[in-house]
Image (cartoon, rainbow, N blue to C red; front, side, top):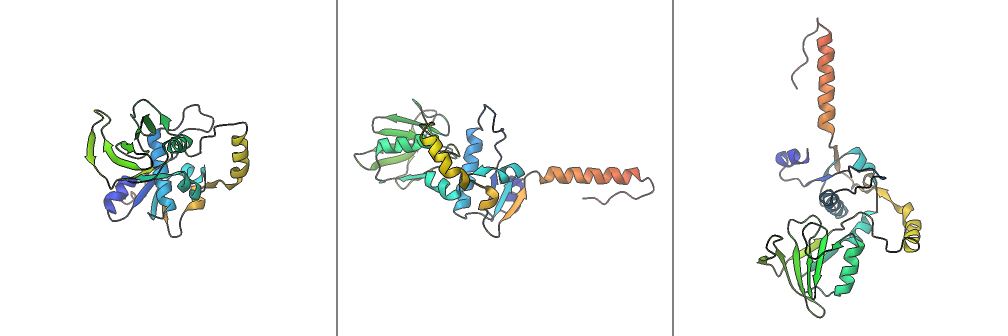
Length: 232
């Protein structure tokens, strides 16, 4: 539905906020691609970057952190940014990035000396950073297949969305309990965070309409003396 609306409304920013497609007690976690789309849409919502949202009832009513917290969890890096490597690794681990030998999919990071590869959630390509003593000396996209640079972009700014919707709790017996005690009551839903004047469309609306039209057609056919319903 979102793609259909983008076709007919090319000048309008339209975002899809998918539901998790898993239950709270499921062992399997939502796919990284799904989390990426959710986090990118929620981040854009917090910055009021779109007015039309396609949702499902489940995604609209699911508990989320306040969007101000989602903004704080999002990391932005660019050429010349001053940062500490160990602190960046700690922050990325805290928002769900996994340390690997090589990055292969969204949410991966790899560290080799002062070279750091990150595959940002929601990005089509990973980025590579060459770190100096205090600053990012080089930042560019590269290919997963051959690990080669795909273009030098010194003005690149990479937005590192969280790879999960809740921060990683390192000590579940101390920090975890304290964190949930302090933040559980502050959880919102997407419905709470909608901006004034937004248009929200149920992603399942076409199926609802198809069923309604089908029911109407069957009702008309059951009345043999009545004309057929008008074409929709």
